[in-house]
Image (cartoon, rainbow over all chains, first blue to last red; front, side, top):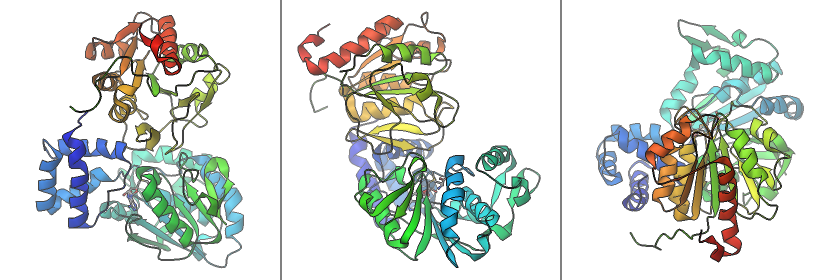
Length: 272
Length: 206
Ligand SMILES: C[S@@+](CC[C@H](N)C(=O)[O-])C[C@H]1O[C@@H](n2cnc3c(N)ncnc32)[C@H](O)[C@@H]1O
């Protein structure tokens, strides 16, 4: 692994990206960020981060490529069946009591989580009265999320996860299979607003009853995690719900006291 | 390079054990041999099919006198604890030292990947960590072990003849020829000695 100069150049590069493009990666978790920057150096054939910085500053298309390295677009439908079961069995009964619902999915990546949640809400009879804000900082990911088209060879895993998550029908009811892709039913996203929003630089834009932000906070350091959690707190209505990834928690957050553990083992919290 | 000279007597702040096929048996023996007052945090990463709760916790619970758990993101490494890498995430060491997780693409077809864990530990802890690589049928971990050694940390590899699967140890020996190559019983002793250093550093001169 590289060190020395690399560690000096790293904050300089992040500062340059922030000044030039307003993307703020300065408070991302270092150890995994370093790995991705090494990959980017290799990809762009740069011998040092300074050389990469030179290109990022002068060639906007390199910055677009950098986004793919700096943000991680890995996602799955119904990842962690237990989480979706808990949403269905324990959170949905509360959601039912609202005449209209707003849901925020920050860091929605390519949309797998959005369609999972939309399907769940449809099966619970709630989708028609729900507005979902699906946000991310990666415009390419947002486009894919909006298209809702996934490679056919991923669908077997998705179907299995859907069934384990307590799905009431067959996942195939929600997509049309094309030549090598599954196109999800566009009625699922009629109430979805896809838009650019950064947990690092933007502010609260709506009051919502449910936020699911899974495997996004792991990419932030504690300071940025606190910023994001403060946004969640300010955006959630009283007694609103926050769902995190399987290994994320509010245990180390400055705002832990403002949330109660609602389904502890699935990382579902309720705003006090 | 500035900073302290790397001395082989540096007490590790963490001991990392990586393995794949055939590793659970060795890891159970190593952990089972640790005394209840063993202070140094131990981090175990074994490739396993993804499932929750993890098969590793099931296989190891009851075999070890120390607290055993999967770390959460940002959790600081605590003494007298054995941490198990959760399935389907990469596990990394970050400043603190504390744990960091990621769902980045698999490395060496693996998530978690031993290289990812070991390299992050080498970069954050330098000579203050030790790595052990045991049985496995793929080359993950070799580069990470090398990184730990280059950073001044102590490293050991299970003797391929003693391992259920020799490919992982062999790949590591090829990359870091100076590493200790040890039989299972010696690994148990080696790990215990690393921990003992923390309570009385002078005993470390083996
Ligand atoms: C690993 S994906 C999570 C996908 C999905 N939530 C899931 O759990 O499957 C992480 C996402 O966070 C997004 N992200 C990174 N930094 C962000 C920020 N500052 N604000 C909003 N989203 C961000 C990335 O672009 C990426 O799409």
